[in-house]
Image 1 (spheres, rainbow, N blue to C red):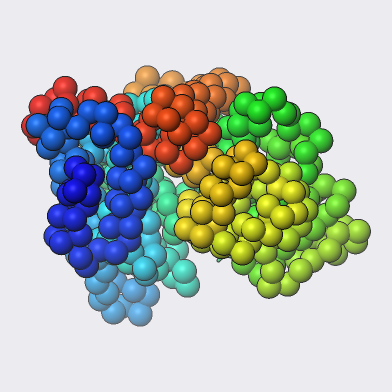
Image 2 (image 1 turned 180 degrees about the vertical axis):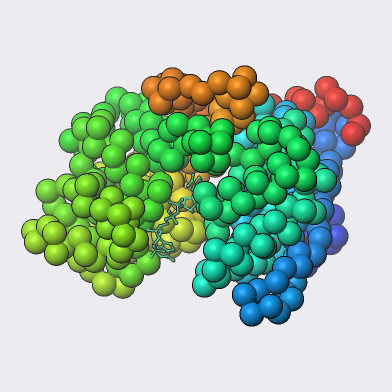
Length: 448
Ligand code: NDP
């Protein structure tokens, strides 16, 4: 049994009740096998993998709050402080009824490698609650956030653990959480990111994930001697990531022709008119089908995803598992030669297998989310830097840094893949490159 297999077998035995975490750990451990085999004696002697797969700490707590009817409610709160080898724990808070320890461990584990890839000094963590903000009043959300922070504040800090938003935690929630942290600790410090501009937020944070996605897509495409100029792009989603991915793709000369929401997708053969999307989504939180009322030459497909549209490049920017094996095969059969992921885990295991087959057969390009959407957390780390400096950088300063970070990620990913005999395999490259830095730091810091 190899070292990786041994560690995974023990993990499976110990955490049999955590399927999401086990799945993530298995995928990552498998892809870092080449670097583990190259350093097996050193890693074994230092129990490196055994330590890597266990969080440094998991904090679980109850969150009591009172609803608008005066009834006392209780939710569960969590913070998984997974790995602080290269910096303070960093990762979002998710408020969603599906939240449990397994999912947060899975997300926290992935976050270690994503954060490492940015080249910035941030460790990996994740947290949240099974609270569902949907359908709650502002006052209920505020009371919940205050109660959540009344416990969480003991374990976080600007140099200790810096949470951000995630599903169900946007600007409103970050504001309430920050207010309560400040009230309890009397500290005005960068303990959360994704803050409003008036209280320490960073310019270009809203754009960061979408812009970063297109910056790295540009690098991937350039790596094969091509350019984004004139390329047809299929985008899913019409939220934060999708909107700014469309904007940057247009600025770099590509033509995004679709966007979607959970009801269906819009196809505009002349190119998506972003002002119309902004008006629908940012203006009045409307549905994407309204697009065709404003642009009659476009078409709307209720209940469908855009993967049947002919394109060069696909940028999934909506949600997890939105591309299955059949969708991936359809994309490839229609001439798509590149997928870069804006959403987290948008491609399921069968889709990834289809990309890999196409990569081996015909050089298909696939950049996984861990590398492709790291622009969001990278600019969150830049928000931490600005908070520490007590300065605010201009939009262009942040954007330039983001561009450099995404180019750096591409370079690390492709170099690591090549170094360990998997040239062009960006999944292996991203995991290996992310792991390499964390492993070095863990070895240097001893058995902690
Ligand atoms: P938003 O909530 O702003 O937008 C999500 C978009 O995806 C909406 O258009 C939404 O439609 C659509 N969508 C959601 N669920 C489904 C579904 N089941 N089927 C089809 N469409 C769906 O989120 P973001 O743009 O911020 O995030 C999108 C993805 O990117 C997520 O996976 C997120 O984890 C990831 N991500 C985001 C980062 C960020 O900085 N924002 C950073 C890194 C990753 P509808 O309005 O109908 O729900």
